[in-house]
Length: 260
Image 1 (cartoon, rainbow, N blue to C red):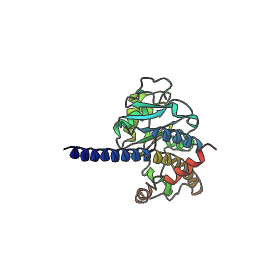
Image 2: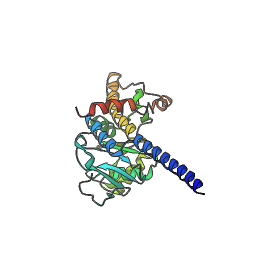
Image 3: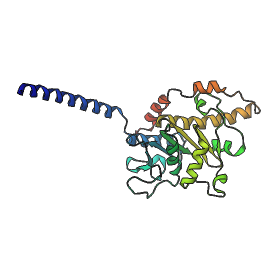
Image 4: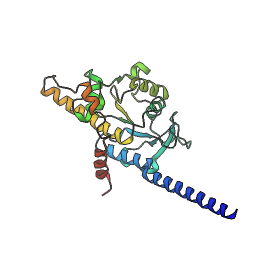
C-alpha cells in the first residue's frame, strides 16, 4: 500500500512539475502587455503617427472585457506607471480616473461592439484629415496599405451631437463613432483625424503608419496624374492587406525606439 502511495505521489509530482514548466514557458513566451503598450506609444511617437496628442490601447489578455490605455500624456514619454486598466464604460478598474484621456470612450465603445478588435489607435495626421474634409475618398494605391480596402467611412460629429469641440468625450459619441466604423479597419473623423483597429498591437501600429503613407502618396499621385490614379483593385487590396502582420516593421521600430 505504501509503495502504491509512493508511486502515486511521484506521478502527481511529475504532473504538477510538468504543468508548472508548461505554464512558465507559456508565460515567458507571452509578451508583457504593459511593456508592449509602452513600446507602441514610443514607436507611434517616433514615426510621427502620434505627436503630443492621440493614443493607443490594447484589449486585456487577462480580461477581454477590459483594455489598457495610458494616462493623458504625450505618447513619447509614457512609462509603465502610466498604463491604466479600464472597463468598457471607460472607467478605471482601480477606481482612479484622474488624468485619463478625455477620449478614452473611443476605445471602450469599439471594444464593446467589436470582439475581433484587440488594439485601437486614434491619431490626427494632417495628410489623412484632408481626405475627411474634402469628399475625396481615401483609397489604397500601394501594397502596404491594402488593409484600407474600400474608402473608409467618415464620422460626422455634427450628426451625432451638433456643435461640439470635435472630441469624443462621452459614451454616446463613442457609440456613434463605433457605429460608423462598423466592421471596417479604419474610420476618418471629419476635421479630427482617424481611428484604426486591428487584431493585435503590432498590426494596428503598422496600419496606422501605412495609412498616413498612403494618404501622402495618394495626394502626390493625384497631383502628378491630374486626378487619374491607378488604385489597387479590391482583390489586390484583399490579398495584400495582411502583409506579414507588420512584424518586420515592428522589429525595426522596436530596435530604433530602444534606449541608446
